[in-house]
Image (tube, rainbow, N blue to C red; front, side):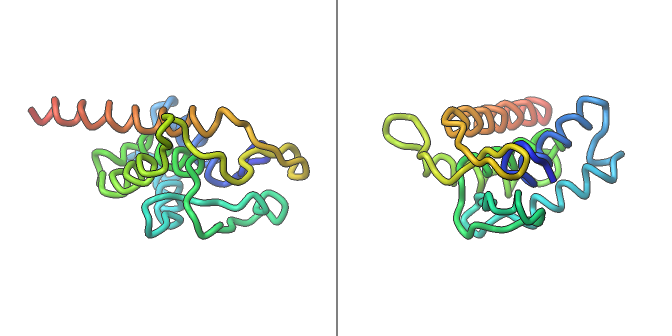
Length: 153
């Protein structure tokens, strides 16, 4: 649970990223494995993720029932930093397809539900999140796929 953004997906992404920066991997870290299992359990049938901002107030994960570009990007990034490309890239391919299909003709991503909160009571949108995180996730996925392909070579 995190109290800055919409909240479980966001916190899981940054927790994995921090653990990975400290040398933890899926293989040697029970918290990373639990985090990956959590994220994968919340993936929608469409390939995306959609966490409802109300979870910040009730402190439990609430599925919005529809994919959200920013939630999908956070989940992808968490899985990428955990090494999901090497384990099973299928969930990431599905997520990437979802993000690509969300992208507008302008190159931007749609403004969707709230993605920010402060102290679990003030909700707002970071308008750049919708463009920053999806592009980061797609770029990181591509980079890791190319690195895996080169390694298998």
